[in-house]
Image (cartoon, rainbow, N blue to C red):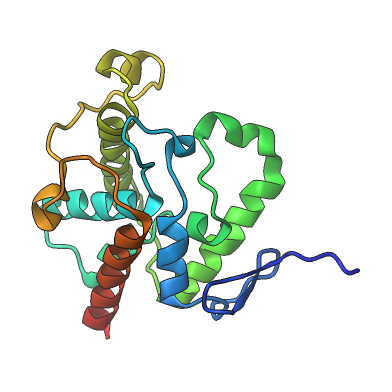
Amino acid sequence: MADRAWVRLPSGRRLDLLAPTPFDWTDADLATGLARTFRWGGHSAWPEPLSVAQHSLSVLALRRTRTRHRLAPAQELRELLHDADEGLINFDCISPLKPFLGPGFAELQARLSGVIATRYRLPSWTPEEKRAHKVVDIAVAAAEAVHVVGWTATEVRETLGIRAAVMARDPLAVRYGDAPWRPWAPDAAAQRFLEELTALQARIG
């Protein structure tokens, strides 16, 4: 039997993880994958784990409020899809583990990120944009560590090495009417992510 490096997606399409193309998944496949891929190793102080889909929407929402100039739709789409490769492989690796997975895993991530950028016509990051994104991404991570997983603010600084202040306000709670920082069920996360993805693509045209 030939080695199989492809996975069957909910749409029925096949994604070859070692030789992906921009046409191997639907938007709904991506939304479902991100909604079923969990941050923090799947650990949570809530009954549900936190999905990468919800995290991605949080980063986009916070980035919108922390920019001097309104982001263009393509820039917002790039924020929404910053972890999209994780939804295709259904794995969000915690940072301390990545060095043990070696360069092969990094190459796999880069390959998937490349076809995602091509599929959605994402602009390249400028150094300033990348820095602004990382500030927001880290701020969301610090808040998740405390409000979702159960770390203390001191542990976030001393153990995780994150210096960002821990936000109290959930950037998504008002919009969706949920309890602040409560992880969403996968179906809700997929639907909300897909709605945002579809709306941004419509704005881009």
